Length: 203
Image 1 (cartoon, rainbow, N blue to C red):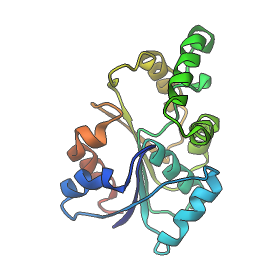
Image 2 (image 1 turned 30 degrees about the vertical axis):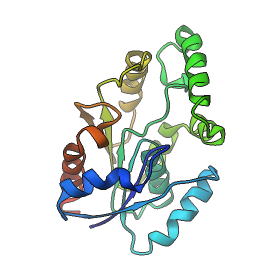
Image 3 (image 1 turned 90 degrees about the horizontal axis):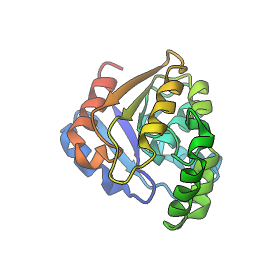
Image 4 (image 1 turned 120 degrees about the horizontal axis):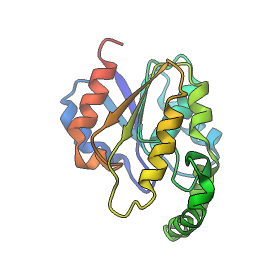
């Protein structure tokens, strides 16, 4: 199956090289470049010319969020695979007790600002992925990392809220938990390739 592949923030199409190698030709991954302006409709519009044959779509992190947006726009899409793209830890609504972590969220927001791309950071923070997920009507796989990356001080609290919200998702979305961190595409491309192959085979 032909599959458009969308990288994470600050990444590039080359981020999929390890996954493509691990797939061994089982499916045709076509990596695309994601760039601004970060109005989500315009991001999707720039993908449209690459999707004339109604491909599946896979994305990591930011790319996973865009893949979900694609699935919402295109209910006829054969499959959407979202690799740990469910929002950012600066979104208070993802925490069981947002007031308890308000100072930590503010500090993390300042760290993110230091990375640059303020337009992208704002667009991601304003996007509630779970609102998008509830509107997706095509088959979708959401793979969620269960291990923190180094320095992810808010991971435990964020993950508790995430588990709460995952339980509300519709039956069209299959959720799998990965024994890996958010960097799974780089750390274990074979795992990502297996997720893609197992979900797409037979569709």
